Structure formats: C-alpha cells, structure tokens
Image 1 (cartoon, rainbow, N blue to C red):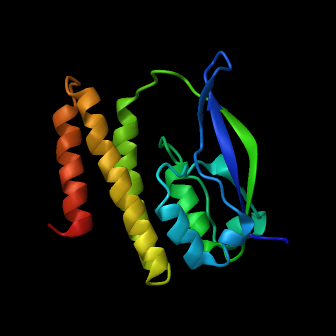
Image 2 (image 1 turned 90 degrees about the vertical axis):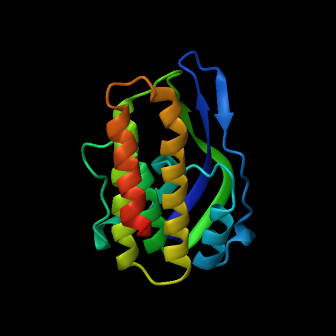
Length: 180
C-alpha cells in the first residue's frame, strides 16, 4: 500500500528475556481510514506506546518535515512520535509484533521527569505548526498525559534533593501551557 507510516505492535522483556509487557492494543487495518480515525483511536487507547520502534516511517516524510530526535533528552520519542503522526498522510496498521524492547527493571532517572516537561513545551509549540482541530486536540491530550505522568512519578522522588525544583517547574509548565 506504500503508506507514510506503518504502526506495529511491540513487547518488552527484562534483561533475562522474561516477558514484561505487551502492548494491549490490536488494530485491524480497516479500523484506520484517515488521520482523524487514527487520532481518535490512539487517543482513546489506554497504554498506546509512543515509542519510535512502534512505527516504520518513510524517510522522505522525516526529511520533508525535518523531523529529528531532540538531542540530550530522555523520552525523545515522546516528542518525535506525535510529530510523525501529525505529518503522516497515509497509515497502515499491522497486528504483528515487530519489535522486542529490553526493559531495565527499576531504572529511574530524575532527569527524565525534567525532560518530559521539555517535551510538553515542545509539543505545545508544535501545535502552532499543525492543522487546527483533530491534530491539536490529539497533541493537547498527549501533553496532558505526559504532565500527569510527571506528577505521578514525583511521589517516587519525594526525597530527591531537586524535588522542589521539579515541583516548581511542573507548576510553571502547566501555567505556561494552560494559562492558569
């Protein structure tokens, strides 16, 4: 079909190759007829993985829109994947597991939470370069979910020396994005 983007399924495993988690969604190709349906479906799937390895993307799409990974941040695919999905025109979904991710159990890194706030700011700016309506709604919902995950993860870091700095930066990011 020569689509811009192929969306596939993935599984994660521990270092010992033990089953960790499989993405819970299964698409049928006929479920996605256009971008509006794609955004509607993935926005309502609990646990859709925004990992780069969930997608096979035409190089020309990445080149035409100059979509690259942002250097120096963790979770860079949380920024990259929504951008790719917004710029794609044609999609094919396949039920096949094409990728196995090796998950590092218990890996927490405080910097990741700050980087997620950078991603939220970047996605909010990116809203200005996409069509109004479904794409903006999709991006705004994604931003909200990422902000929520930062908030939820903060409990894990309550005793970290920079906890108050993260709390303040989360508050300021919310204020700057939502104006309140």
